[in-house]
Length: 251
Image 1 (cartoon, one colour):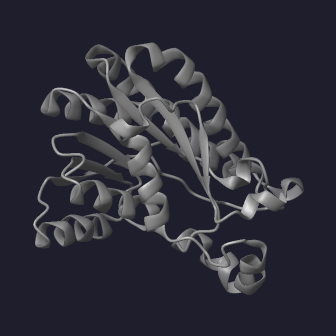
Image 2: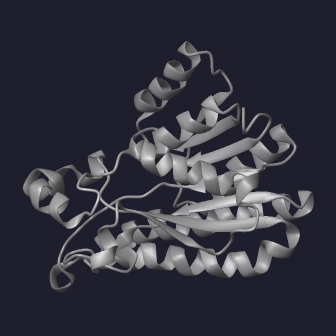
């Protein structure tokens, strides 16, 4: 299996895209730890489902990704347990849409702290261990909304745009130590997060997508696996849009 023996940490791994990523790494032989915020039952469902399939190197860890102390403690524990860390996937994210003129400060700060601050905390925490072992893969989850936002996405678009800038900067700093840093920018994917939009305008959305379908979490997971693989070792600082061609028209 492609990731046999690799140690992988995934944030936001209990549902949607995160769950698909956890499952994909586990099935390729990796030892996977994933982070969930509050839904312990959903997290345990992921672990149990994989164990039933014979993949038992998976563990769930409760953590508030917007809390620097909790992030540092979790990464320190895993690095000690694993004697290093090979792959980090920053997938945790939330939406609190609203027009800028009426957006309250709480909606802004919660999205920025969960979507962007968490990426900084986890990236900083794994940087030294990865530099020490002179190997690492970091994949951050951005969005096509970073470049082509819809109305009401000021906080979300800002957080995802920040992730792209952070990704590129990290790539310039860590490449010489054998650590690559890339981002994946999903388009419209069939998840709980996009349910409201899909219910309102799925037919119209599909008309804008050259592939004429919405993406599935597994589409994103496969892109993440590629960027985490040894075959992608000469790719760093890139933002990979996985959107069925949606952004070709500049939505």
